[in-house]
Image (cartoon, rainbow, N blue to C red; front, side, top):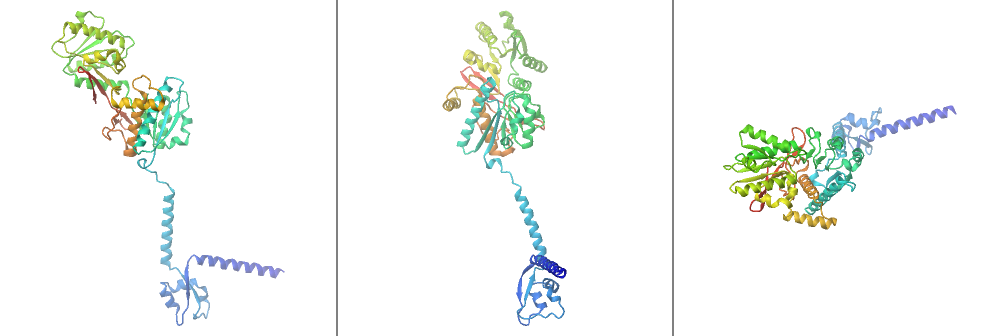
Amino acid sequence: MTRLLRYFLLTTLLAFTVSSVSAQQSSTIRGQHKVKKKETIFGISREYGLTIEELVKANPEMNVPGYELKKGMILNIPFSKDSLEAMAKREAAAKQVSVVKKAPVPVDVRNREIRLGIMLPLHNINGDGRRMTEYYRGVLMACDSLKKQGLSIDVHAWNTPEDGNINKVLEDPAAAKCDLIIGPLYSKQMDALSAFVTKHDIRLVIPFSINAPQLTTNRNIFQVYQSPTEQNDVIIARYLERFKNYHTVVIDCNDSTSKKGIFTFGLRRQMEQRGLDVVVTNLKTTEGNFSKAFSWTKPNVVILNTGRSQELGVAFSKIDGLKAKSPELDITMFGYTEWLLYTRTYLENFYKYNTYIPSVFYYNPLSAGTQHFERKYRQNFRSDMQNTLPRFAITGFDHAFFFLKGLHKYGKSFNGADGMFGYPPVQTPLKFERYGNGGLRNKTMMFIHYQPEHTVETIKF
C-alpha cells in the first residue's frame, strides 16, 4: 500500500513537471517540422534561422545518448532569441498603448455641446429672486437663438438664495461638468464657487456687482461690473478728454444722502491740477449769483452732485430761466446713469441741453432689436419684462449670447477681449481685460448722448 502511494505521488509529480515544461515551451514554440530524408540538425536549424542549441532546447530528446535524426520524425521549431525579444518589445508597446487609451482625452468644447450652469436666486420670494428669474429667462432665449445657429447647449439651473448653502449645490455631479457657470449674486458664496471653478477648470461669470476679491488671483473669473470707484476713475478720464476746452459748472444740490460728491470732488481735483475751468455754485443761490458761475466765452458743462430726479427738475428750471435771459449761452448737461430712468419726464430737456449720461448699458425702446426681443419675451412667457433699468432679461440674453458664442468659437482660450467676434448687443456691450495675474474685468463704458436734433448717440470707450 505504501509503495503504491509512493508510485502515485511520483507519477503525479512527473506529470505536473512535464505539463509545466510543456506550458512553458508552448509559449516559445512557433510550429513543427516533419523530418525529410537526409536532413540534418544543422540544416534544419539553418532553415529556420535558429542555432543548434535553440533547436535542441526545444526538442530535449535530442540530448539522449545515441539519438539519430530519422525521416518522419516531428520536431518542435521554436522562436529564435531575436524573435522573442522583438515579440516582447511589441507586447510592451501594446500594453503602453492600451494604458493610454484607457485615459479618455477631453473633447474640445468647440466640438461638442456646451454645458452651462446658472447659480442664482431663482424664486418668487423677493425682488432678488424675481429679477434673477427674469435674467434667467433671457439666458434661455439666448440659448434658443444660438441653437438655431447650430450650437448645442445643455443648461442646468440651481436656485441659490441668499441663505442657501452653495456647497450643497456644488455636490451635484452636473455642476462639475459645466464649461461655464453664471453666478453668484451674493459675495458670501464666492469663496466656495471660486475654488470649485478652479478645481474643475470652469469659466465663471459674475453677472452683477458684488465684492469679489477672488478676481485678483483666479484666472477663470469674468466680472461684468466694475466697482463704483473704478467706474468713477474711467468716467473722469473720459470727461477730461472730451470736455477739456469747456467751462465746468458743478451745482451743489444740498442732498445730504447723495454719494455723487465722490465723483464731483474727484473731477474738480483733477481739473484744478490741470488748470482747467471749474466753478461751484448752489441750487438755492440767487439768479444773479447763479449766472456768474457760467462762461460767456466758452461752452459750459453742468454737473449736479446728486442723481435724484427732484433736484434735476429744479436745475432744469433754473437753467431755463438763465437761457431765457441769455440765449447765447452754450450749455451742456453731464449726468448719471440714474437719469436714464427719467427719460419720460425729462427727455425734451435732455435733447435741448445736449445731455451726456455715462453708463455701462443702454436700453433703447425704439431700436428694432429691443422691440423684437420684447415681442419674443411676451410670446415665450406671457408677460412683459419688469420696468427696470437695465432690463434684466435683455442683460441675461446679452451675457449668455456673448460667452456661449465665444466658447463655441475659441474654446476655453476665450477671454472676452474687444474684437474677438462681432456681436451687436441689444443693451449691454462687453469688453474684458485681464486684471493683473487674476481674472478678467469688463472695461466697457459709454456716454449716452442726447443730441439737440432729437437723436441719441452711444459713444463707446
